[in-house]
Length: 243
Image 1 (tube, rainbow, N blue to C red):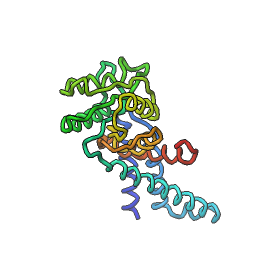
Image 2: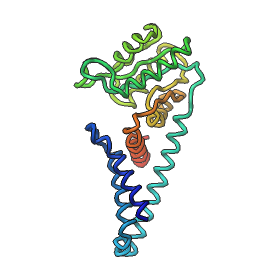
Image 3: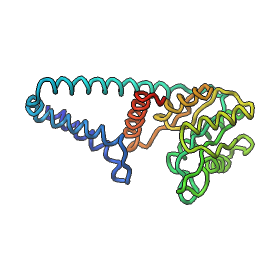
């Protein structure tokens, strides 16, 4: 059991590694906390047995239910991420943070790269660059996406701008308006992180689109936390009826 406890501690440390680059969010904290509690239980099992029986049973039932729900959501996220387009769909590039110098952040650059790889192979496909501007960005995310794609060799005429959205929900809703206005196919490829594809797909379907995944992998250090955060967000949204 000590070996298993050591693995739990190492897992918790891995989830907390992004702290070294100034990143902190709930997707890092709750898995790390759960793994550390598991390590304590493995090393000191008597502590758990001191609790009242009803409390132990309640905790076990709640933990099993949460783990099953999260496992189901993570499976659905993986299935959606693997649902790739066949090459005829327009691409919606979901916006992400733009750096203060006007260049895309690492996450946005990965989404742009995924779109470029698709557009450069499927020359008949077009693109909707989606994303507004917050008070820390020097330009809209849509314009940053468009300018970067053009600098990589994609013709400006293949790129439509949607530069008013400030959330994933609005990204898809406003992009759907552009697609209908321009008479584009409603089957779309969504360029975003793999962990983001399920939630993006749900919003796309609500807006009358048929989504496919043009996903990109996250940085190794950040990926597990982002997947955990997204799973928790989807669980919360499902429980509250927000989806």
